[in-house]
Image (cartoon, rainbow, N blue to C red; front, side, top):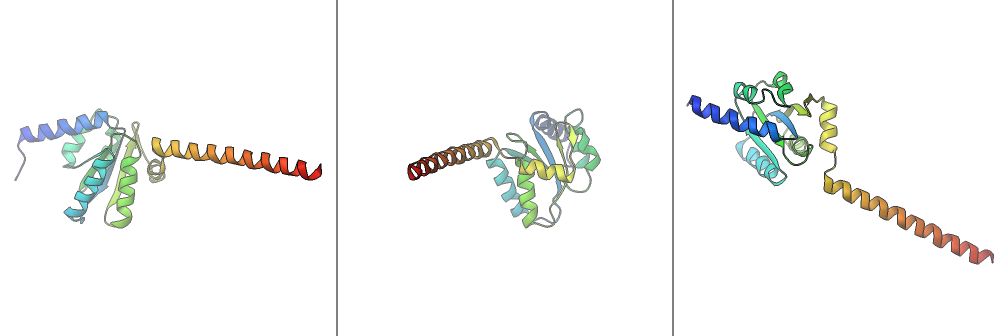
Length: 165
């Protein structure tokens, strides 16, 4: 059943709003992936602030016009599944990358961040970028290691000084 013009306008408006507020966008080919797996992917995405849609290519092209993700028009073809990272720029890339490891038919076809079309290497870098929470944990662990290292060095220096005296 074909969509009416009013429904198409609503879809374009909704995707355009997402495009104007999202930090990054990833498009993928989701053909031959069963609905249950896509639903699991959507559920995982909701938990980390990723909004996803399967949308007609012409409607997606209209929706991303005059947004930071307009550069994705070159990559839109076939069955298009788009994900928007709303909280952390790499969350959608990380989610799609993990999903594609278990589902070989799921292929990331393009990504955009800050108005730039990303290469495959840059998509992987975006996916590997730590979240704020992960970065704080790494910083605290580094500080803990440095502090404990200095303590051990100080204790060994005291021990050596006592042995020589």
